[in-house]
Image 1: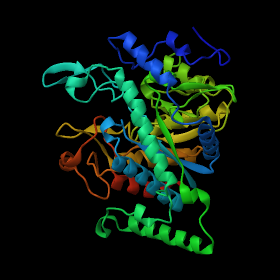
Image 2 (image 1 turned 135 degrees about the vertical axis):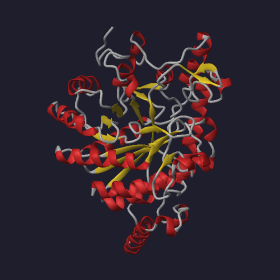
Image 3 (image 1 turned 180 degrees about the vertical axis):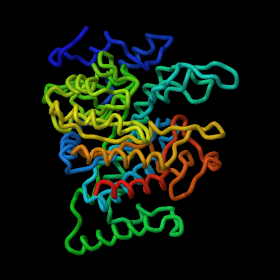
Amino acid sequence: MKTTIQTWTPDAWRSLPAAQQPVYRDDAAVEAVLAELRELPPLVVPEEVDHLHALLAEAAEGRRFLLQGGDCAEAFADCRGSIIQNKLRVLLQMSVLITHGGRTGVIHLGRIAGQYAKPRSGDTERIDGKEVPVYRGDIINGLDPSQREPDPRRLLEAYHRAAATLNHLRALVDGGFADLHHPEHWDLSWSREDAGHYLETLDQVRNSLAFVQRLGGLPEHLRTGELFTSHEALHLPFETAMTRFVPESGRHYNLGAHFLWIGERTRQLEGAHLEYIRGLANPIGLKVGASMTPESLRKVLAKLDPGRRPGRLTLITRFGAGRAEAALPGLIEAARSEGHPVLWSCDPMHGNGRTAAGGLKTRAFGDILQELQEVAALHRACGSRMGAVHFELTGEPVTECTGGVEGLDEAGLQRAYRSGCDPRLNRSQSLEMAFLIAQMIR
């Protein structure tokens, strides 16, 4: 069954194939949880969603830069004040480096307060010789092998953890944590010997801000900062329960986050995920890899953004180091020829996975940087612009990706490897990457 935008409903996807969905034993228990979710307050409001949409339109026009980052998959256990604060701190510090070096305003979009589900390549895995269901994120099951049965009560837990996370983020921003007048919030753990010119750049930023302050104060957007939330729209019953009709606009919003995206494994043209997300008023993202052809992209663009609205659609490319040149120019031309004002983002993480000698999944800082540089250069050559980046990162001193100013090698990964899914840049590597991004987009 196909629907038009006029006949779209939040449940229209149910007649279509839905990939990556959990199988629950008790349908009645699932429906009871979803009924409760439908009655709970929204986590964000339409006015915030519309404001982000307007900012993304400016980014698509080259007037801002989108920084999107956060955990591969949030863990319920990480809903703690210090961890949330460190995530916000690293995003804000990255944005200062990009603003200062790239001479552009930055939109802060966290993979946070809802990024609890992860797509997986298989349904099961072997642990200690036993076949168990694969871990699909805390919203579905537990990382411990004894907790792999999908549990619908986790949907409510995800809502409450997201609400608590968002509440703390709002309190931090409103309470002045993002105020650049307070350098104590921005101190780094790096030593001068480790970081050198990166800390010198932050000193330059602070001196510049002090000078502006003496002249009469900081602009309000530098004083407060804004943070928006995002997650992958993967668990469709949960996302549908968080969808609300807003009479004032006559449209449906997913009010569980400001921004949602569809991943590589669920972007089938006639699949349930694209059908669901196409009817939302939220700005949306789409992961685009090497398997996406220009003709396929044209069809997806027509489905997701028939009105060609600036800020509506962010295309998040993910190829892997050395692979962008074969695919990206054709995709850029396809979007341009159809008149779609998309915002182009680069996810340099998901195409650059590797397995260390000890069996841990990791990513190399050099591979991540190489893909960013290649994508930025290809956009310039095609008369386009890389206007956004999408990272898996954390504000904690983890050891999950090799390389960077710290010189982390594979032997050091065991020291603080904490991710239950994919490896993340730590705070030092994230700030180094921001410094380099600023140089690319200047």
